Amino acid sequence: MTSPAGPEQRLRFAEFALDRLPSGRCHARVRLTWLGDREFAGEAHGLTSQAGELRCAAEACLEALQKSVEGRLKFELVGVKSVKVFDSTVVIVSLAVQGEAVPPRVVGSCLTEDDTARAAALAVLNATNRLLGNRLFMR
Image 1 (cartoon, rainbow, N blue to C red):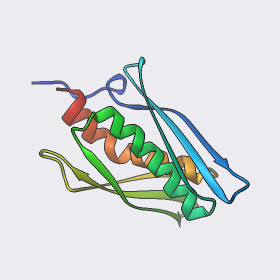
Image 2: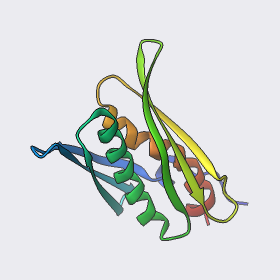
Image 3: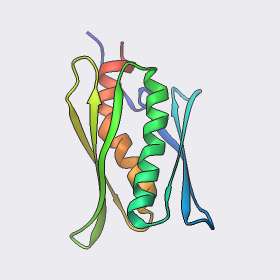
Image 4: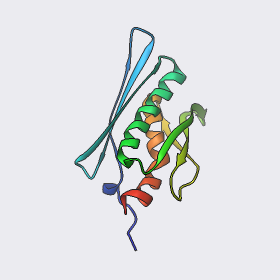
């Protein structure tokens, strides 16, 4: 029997950057680490708008995740939304997952005060971290 994945055995959110370009587009970069020395980076482009930046950030995180699972799972961004709840902002993502013995959809969220794009990337990681730790990295 394997032990539950500890914090050191999970993908960790290491870096996030969102650039708003003069062309009306944005560029997001996400870097994830695993066991301190393995790095997975993802990038995405989108429109500079609230919805566009959320989607761009989530897609950059998904690209980094895809690299980390080396083809064992496939993720697709179904949707991302920022909502006001109890005087706070919560970013919620829904992901479709394809792979052996995994749920077809996962949902993640992240509470934020000011950086909704960064929260979108973190919500993706929150949606997938338990799944990845329990099913892939512990094998």
